[in-house]
Amino acid sequence: MKFWKYLGLRVLTWALTILIGVTFIFFIPRMFPSDPVESMIGQMQARSGQMDPAAKEALRTSLRIQFGLEGSLWEQYTSFLWKGLLHFDFGPSLMSYPTPCSEIIARNLPYTVGLSMITTIVAWVIGNLIGLLAGFRKNKRSSKILEAIAICIYPIPYFILALVLQIVFAYVLGWFPLQATIQYSNGTGAFIASLLRSSVLPALSILLLGTGWWIISMKSLSSTTAEEDFVLYARYRGLSEKKIGINYVFRNSILTQITALAMSLGGVFNGSIMTEIIFGYPGVGTLIQGAIMQSDYNMILGCITISIVAISTCTLIADLIYPFIDPRIRYS
Amino acid sequence: MKKFWKNAPLRLKLGLIITLFFLVLGFVVYFIPHTNPFPNNIRAKNLAPSADHWLGTTSQGQDIFWLLIEAIHNSLTIGFIVAAIGTVVGVLVGLISGFVGGALDRVLMLITDTFVVIPSLPVLIMMTSLMKGSSTVILLALVLAVFAWAWPSRQIRSMALTMKERDFIHTAWFSGEGTIQTVVTEILPFALTWSLSNFMNATLSAIASESGLAVLGLSPGNLVSLGNMIQWARNYNAIMMGRWNWILPPILGTIVLFVGLFMLITGYNDYMAMKRGR
Image (cartoon, rainbow over all chains, first blue to last red; front, top):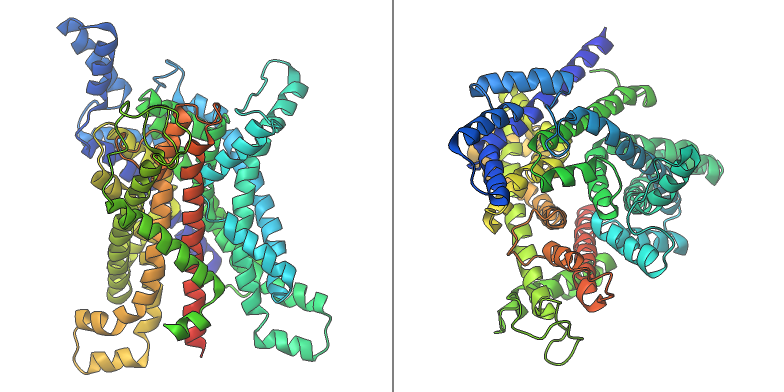
C-alpha cells in the first residue's frame, strides 16, 4: 500500500513541476515589454518597405492568432496548456511555414536524445569504473594522475571543449568534418556512415566532460566509503581486495551515483544544445538556434516545453527505479 | 598564514594562485590607463603580437590584449553579481523553508525543485532572445540569477532541517530567542562556509551560461565578455584564417580560469573537511 502512496505522491510532484515550469515560460515572455508581433511587422517593413494600414491590420490579426496571442491572458493560458502541454501542438513553425512545430521537433529530437543518452550512459559507466579504482587505491600514482586529468577537463564549459576539439581534430588534423554533414538521400548505409562520422566529435565533447565529473565524484565517494568501519572489518576477516572493492565499496557508492545521474540530465541537455550548435549537428539545439535567428517564437516555446517534459520525466523514472536497486530504501 | 600554506592541499594552493592571477588581471590591470580597445578601425588590422599590441589586433583593428582584460573584468563581474543574488536568495529561501516548515515549506520546495529540474539554458535562451538588442549587463545578470538560487536553497534547507534538532538550537529556543534571531546568530555561521563554496560555484556557472548565450548571439552586442570575444572571433572566421593570437587567448583564458576556480572550490571543501576532522 505504501508503494502506491509513494508512487502517487511522486507522480503528483512530477505533474506539478512540469506545470510550474510551463507556467513560468508562458508568463515570462508576456511580462517583457517587447511584442513579438510588432517586432515581426517591423522587420517585414524594414525588408520590404511600408505597407498599407488595412493590410498591416490583417497581418497583425493573423499573426496574433498564429502566436496564440488572441483573447484574454487566461484564455491564452488555458489554450496553451490544453494544446501545447497535452497535445504538443505549438502551432505552425514560422521559419518553415506551415509545417507544425511538433513535426519538426519530432524530426530533430531523436538526434539529441541519441547523442546525449548514449554519451551520458557511456560516460557514467567509464567514469564510475575509473573513479572507483582511483578512490579504492587512492595512494597509487596512477590514481592521482587520473584524478588530476579529470579535474583539468571537467570544469571546461561544453562549447569551449567542443571548440577546442573542432579546432584540433577537424581544422588542424582534418580527421572529421568541421560541421556535421549527414547524407539523407544516398541510402541507409551512407546515412549511417555519415551520421557516425559527424557524431564523433560532438559525442567526444559530451563524453569527456561527463567522464571527468563521474571520476571526480566517484573517487571521493569510494575513498570515504573505503575508510568506513564495515570495510575495515572486511579487511580483518581476510577478504580479498577484489571482493571488498566490488561487494563493499562499489555497491555502496554506486547508489548515490544513480541519483546523481538523474540530477545531471538537465545539465547534459544544456551541454548537448551547445555542442550541437558548435558542430551544426541536426538536433534540438540547432533547431533552437535557427528559431532564435528567425524569431520563431512558437518553435522556441515548443522546444522548451518538450525539454521540460522530457527532463522531468527522466528524473521521475530514475526516482521510481531507485527503490528497486537499493533495498534499504522504503517507500515513505 | 604560514601554517595555512603548509597544511593546505596542493589543489587549494594552485586554485588560489590562478584565481588571484585572474582577479589581478580583471580588477587591477584593468584600471591601468589604456585606450578603449573596443572601437573598430582606429588601429591597424590583423597585426601580429608586438610591443605595442601584446596579442596583436583583430580583423576589425581591435587590441586583443586589452579586449581580453576587459572581457575577464566583465565576465567576473557578471559572475559575482549572479552568484551574490543566487546565494543570498538561496540561503534565505532555504532557511525559511527549513525552519518554518509545514505548507509554506512544501510550496517553496516544489518551486525550488522545479527550478532544479528544468533545463536552464533553453529558458535563458527564451528570455534573452526576447530582450534581443535591448539587453544590458544588469538585465543579463538578473536573468541568469533566476536559475542561481534553487540549488543553494535546497542544500541550505536540508542543513537547516538537521540543525533544527540539535541541542544548542533548543537551548536558544528555550532561552527565548525568536526565530529570526536564532537563524541569524546560531545557524548562519554554519551556513557561511558552505555559502562561500557555493558562491564560487555559482560564479563559475554564471560565466559559463553567459558565454553559452554569447555563442548564440544572445549576450548584449557591446558587452566585452569572454564568451562574446570567442563569438566575435568565430564570426569573423578567425579559425579559418588561422589567427591563433585572436581565437586562442579567450579560449585558453576561459579554460584556465575555470580549472583554477574549480580547484579552489574542491580544494577549499577538502580543506574545511580536513579542519573539521581534527
